[in-house]
Length: 294
Ligand code: BEZ
Ligand code: FE
Image (tube, rainbow, N blue to C red; front, side, top):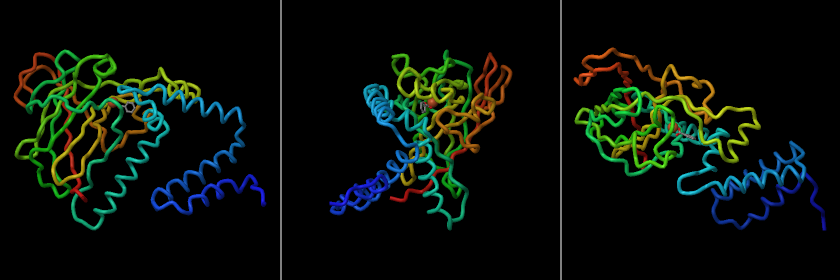
């Protein structure tokens, strides 16, 4: 009976999948085994280190409940969530390569604070009153050929001026809503200028980041999710241009094309006609959606 040597184990595991009927699953699992074994050999992992890794993954699972997803946080902070988003976007761009038109809006991570079923609000409504510095968000949603998309659903969510989301405070929904674009694809709503904030650091992922010598912060951003029939769903953010941590986002989500100026205005008439009796900001951003491939 030939004995397996250090360099043989990975192939032996892969060979056992000879009867696997699902070609894609087999491909993914074979690559996982190959790279995991290569990692163990590369760092010459000791039994104590492997046990520490298993305990870390166990603690990560145990930290999860309906409101807390520590595994997604692990994926986010290791850059894997954003890598998957970027690969999906590159796939879409390749499919569009021979078609005329503009590049679609870049996507970024969804994060753990999306809460389905946010209240439907009218264009121009203020969802941020009392939560921070007032900001008018406005722009247009089109397809990549510049055609306006009417009735596009726009879900928006952010933390408060201290960087905390309603879910983290145990509150009912706040600073989140769903809007629909008008006939010309325009949207507008008032919320706050978002501030930078730390990702949850009180679990195993926080301990890992601390041990890595990394900070927990994300630059200020407004989350947006856009959905319209006949178009691919877009999950993205608008990042605040003067925010700290744009160059060291804890989850690697920043795309240059999503960084937006938030000019400050003195009290007076805002571009949507609202009279403001205190200083306010504006953030203008146009979104371009990709036609659906399914
Ligand atoms: C967020 O932006 O809400 C977020 C994204 C990834 C991890 C934690 C928070
Ligand atoms: Fe966020």
